[in-house]
Image (cartoon, rainbow, N blue to C red; front, side, top):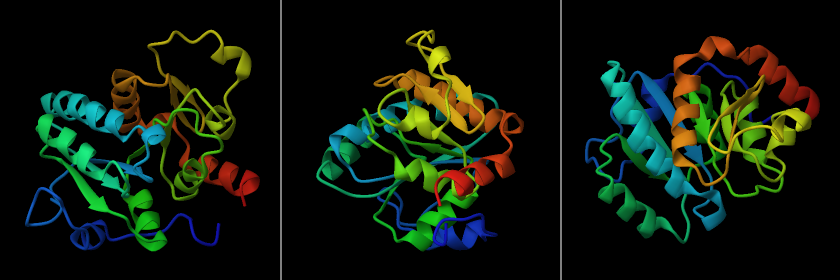
Length: 210
């Protein structure tokens, strides 16, 4: 909680400091909504699903007149493979910005509208807690320790269809290995921020994960 917290951030200043793997001009600043992923590029993190979901929600939100920017923060063994997948999907508004320090991650979490982390069986999910402490809303999977972190009702979870999203007071849960559900959850958060009490989310994270 001394590293990740709600902060007042100049979004243009932060974004202007970041590199882009597809634009020599850096990260574009003319966006309406910002989605981010933060983590190492390991197979179980499923960054490929973030890219697949970005293809869906960027096009769907564009039809509604909204420009969504997606930032992929991190690095790892799958770097080349993921950037190749990005090119195959023709994603011009999704940018890989490399590994960043805690100060930049805190700033990005604070200026983002939604955090996407569709991991397979994330054992604990520290990054979801960092997200909540930084005034952002997480989307995670129905596996590992994520449902406990997002305080889901276990009885309700057993009845969720495999293709649907499950909002909780602290974020949204989705089935594993489902890019369409990830896109739907991202759009739900971006289009309905009033469904979440961010001060309540921050307090919950502070009280349970200090």
